[in-house]
Image (cartoon, rainbow, N blue to C red; front, side, top):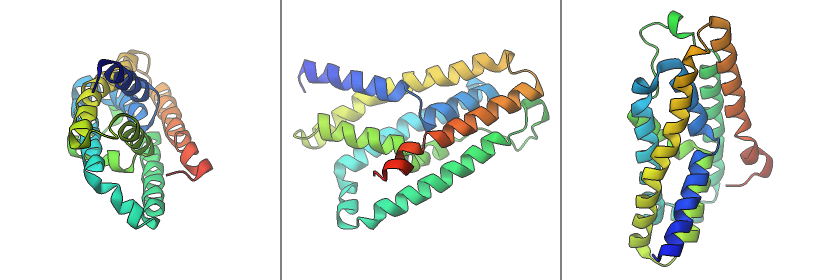
Length: 200
């Protein structure tokens, strides 16, 4: 991959990773509710999970959807249902002072698995592979994953860090509940492109 294409890929990775989406909104909420240290497995799971998605799609998993077009519809339905459930969990989360011991952020494996039902992750991965790895085979796919992973991790860390920084502002029960409600609404709003266009 030449230097110009590499720079373009890095720019694409940064812009798509740092802009609002399900991962970033959930990390913002997690940072505010649990702090940066407890959100770290979630952050790492997002970065590693997306890299696994890129490599898997590049290796041919996407071919399953070409053979079985209905699989796209099933994936979208599952994704929407899961995101609605997550939004409800965020909206009804108890403030830190009231949270029982069972309350916890996403684990590493949960965050890895979440990428497969995240519409933005699918759009990012498919676009990156189509534009930046069309002729390089698995070497090209590997390069896309290698460029994306550190940029993605750095970008999502900003959101988790911002959430953590907001803990001082969200110290009251009412403010935290309002914040969680807003985050839940934004998470649902991030589904609008999928629902409105019917796109994969």
